[in-house]
Image 1 (cartoon, rainbow, N blue to C red):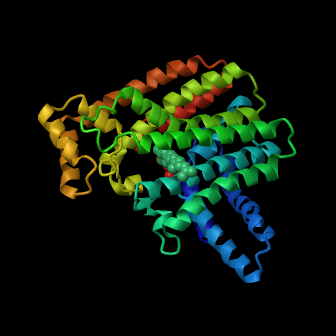
Image 2 (cartoon, protein in one colour; image 1 turned 135 degrees about the horizontal axis):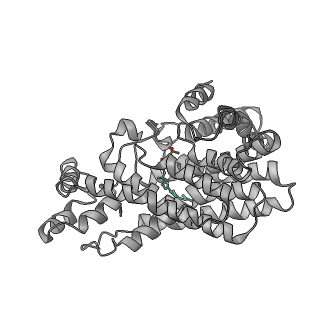
Image 3 (cartoon, helix red, strand yellow; image 1 turned 45 degrees about the vertical axis):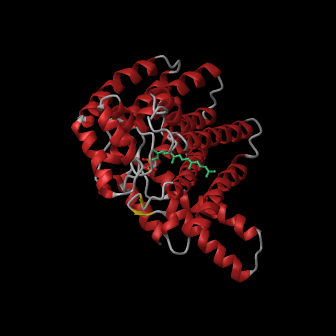
Length: 368
Ligand code: GRG
């Protein structure tokens, strides 16, 4: 019932231009079948009637809580990509179903990362509700296990729906594996970017920032859904994948920069979460920009205050960002992204993909 209510709420919230209401609704309404396929795995374990019910109920709630409430951009991007490759022909039948299943694989991967990320960052809210690990019935130990459950569920879905597709299955499998591998490495870079003994912020450089955000965000958020759609639509030419990847790396870096900016500047009601980048001592785009502008005295003070949970110290850092008008610096950065990324999109040697990638850029450009 709760999941149904959320599906209806999400229908109002999510949209990607060029996907019809029919296509978007089909994707959302696949969730109950996706859940059934995953929970069937629990039933197959034959834990006994009481345990079976208990475990099924727990993981059903886990899937509802962690997979719903987002913008679904990643999942819908799979549909968008397939549609653009097929000359904007309305998706239907088996192709719509397959694209939707792969879309859910990416959304479940997003849920897997977000559950783990919220534990690592001690976050409080996500998508306007408490983080999964904050629920009294869940807590840290379960949340770690549940993030792995979400990861395993992706491969369960893939096997159930694609294992008979002899050529496609290993390609999809390898891609999903590779992208989660890159993300885990990105998360490692992110977690260890700014060690406590780096008093001078020497590790905060544009190239280090780029490596972190491309690995932790761009691969799974942009390249993965595009490449899944490309494989499903039958594309196999390596150069098309390479050029699409180059665009996706830029889109992902821009998207993560937005995320870093919004972490300090957007109200938590809009963000759906409370930003923690300052107290978590993150190698954020805002920190990078501040370091290029502040005085040696301010830098010495920042060393003491950055990474501290004290509200006044967090406010001091935010005031420093204000003093150096980082909001204006960000707006200028954002304006430059559209022409820069559009030029890269023109180099993609597939007309349909050029349209799809442009729609993706439009979708994220100046997002709140
Ligand atoms: C624990 C095995 C293990 C792996 C950890 C946690 C992790 C790997 C990676 C974290 C990657 C991560 C969460 C990057 C942030 C990406 C980001 C900007 C997410 C927010 O995306 P939105 O705004 O969210 O699209 P919605 O809610 O709309 O889905």
